[in-house]
Length: 217
Image 1 (cartoon, helix red, strand yellow):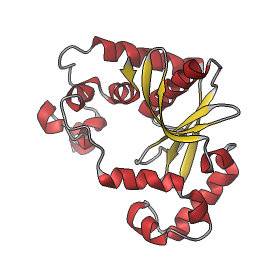
Image 2: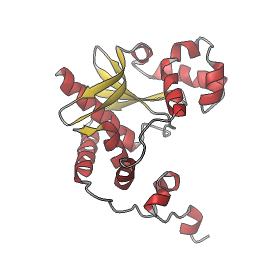
Image 3: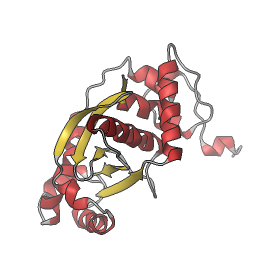
Image 4: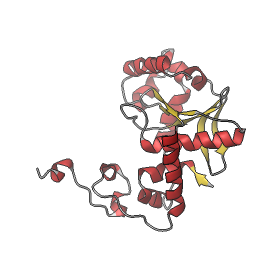
């Protein structure tokens, strides 16, 4: 039974997953605090939580509320995300299992909460695989089709919809094969920007290069 988080990490970098499995996997308090913003949308829209926003959000409270209002207009199931059927649910499928930050009903859909920054459009590839894994597991558990999932970025007041397409399902299957095949340190990435921010870069021993050095400047 594969973990959602393993599939996500393997999509980012298989070698990183190798090190994550051997490290302390406890969630820092500040990450939990950012995720908790995803459960405070009503209070935030009503004008509250300024102290929390000032400390945890990526933008000042007024800009955050403006972004959150845009999200309300664009997200088709924002009302369900405000009051989900359940939160922090262990979802177990045929092939994988993990925690869904929220589970929506009628129709069922998982929502995953990321403490990080969203891309300009859509979701990051590791988050796409993460979302598909949760959707597949929820579908298996409920014996029904789950066509979409959501990824929330509460530090930015943003929610992205992830449709479970054939392309995304193929990426999920590739991630499964990658995780199942790890029995030692996978090869290092080469000249990847991912390595610059990886907390295991020193342990890995990868040689990172800046854009200027790659261009010979």
